[in-house]
Length: 560
Image: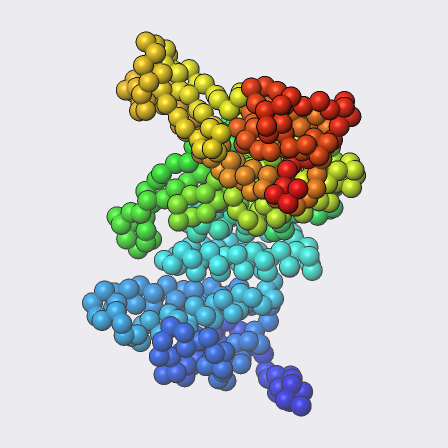
């Protein structure tokens, strides 16, 4: 009943048709609503705004909504500057009249930006210019994003005129000067999508970070027709909102790959993925507060968030390729993206998930092993469960269990008999994985002397220093993989698995990482407990073992 009555009341309201009514109605609304505001959360209750003036403003036609927002932003910027001065001079714990007006106007802007709008020529650019005057960048970015959504909806309803398309292009060109909000690239990508490439070039706007510079340089070196296809691909990637690609996304990507050339696309994107996986995490200082740029805070940066969607799309597109090099670079990228940063978490989780998706859907046994091997590098439990889900889905195809896939995917990290040596100009950096499951490192000089700390010249040489950092990362990876493999092997006693002699020696006894653990275990050969001693099998009492060529070997359990 209440809904029907409210509909009848709204139906009888005379809509606001002239922009000259806006000042009087907004002034009336501010006078009525301001006394109801006590805290910043007062407007969480929508009934705080209910009044005759607000009801009339809600009835403004879609064609005049941009004029209403322009007016609201005009008076908002005036009161915003007043509020900053008042807050600087008075008690910051008390809300003053200027701050209340700003709060009301800010709420109105967001509310009306979520309703249907139609843009006459020149109004979209005028509205964007007005939004750029807002000092609070987060509010400006949110309002800009909502405005673009309404513009996109208008395009679906009515189509966009050529004049409006050129207006959108002018906004795109000036976007960096207009906005500084961190998440504007999503709205920017939607604007690029709205403009037809036949009329206006709508390039994806990269930043100034190291990855963006490489991609920008690459685009500048391409012929103009290919630039257009690459820009379409970047725009396709940038507007995605899903965790995995849809069938329509893959269809559009395939069309662009056909235009670019499959070989060129694969070679180029593989080089980008390999480049990103080799990047170091940078420590930067950025302003902690936009209103106080001199107050800096340390910031760990691996990939700029703006590029997450681009790299996700690049990884998704690798599903169309199934070669070994593609699987290798995707595995390296996933491992790097899930390395944890202090107080931050994974370096780039969304990009890592995209690489995992590509490996899981490449439909080859080698990609399945690459995917399973990531469990030795990644310690996030949710990601390990995701990998298990993907691997379990593919096991039936190859007639193997999850445990059999996992044991075939364990990386050896270049270890031989549990040892790896890295050479540094006459010094050897030795990594040893002991039979107790501990990773130890030491240096051996040209004279055979052992030391624990790296020589001084390593830190002074940039190339050797970078090599040592990678070696240190490798040590951490071995330690992490060691704990995962210990847990996996301890669970084997409950699974009643068996191996042929050749399988066991390949996967366990002679494996670079696992050999140090496997050679300390007791095994069963034809119900006889045996050990691996000095390169051969012996019974626990020291006697030689005689068994058939087809014997199956199991892990000994205490109850056996």
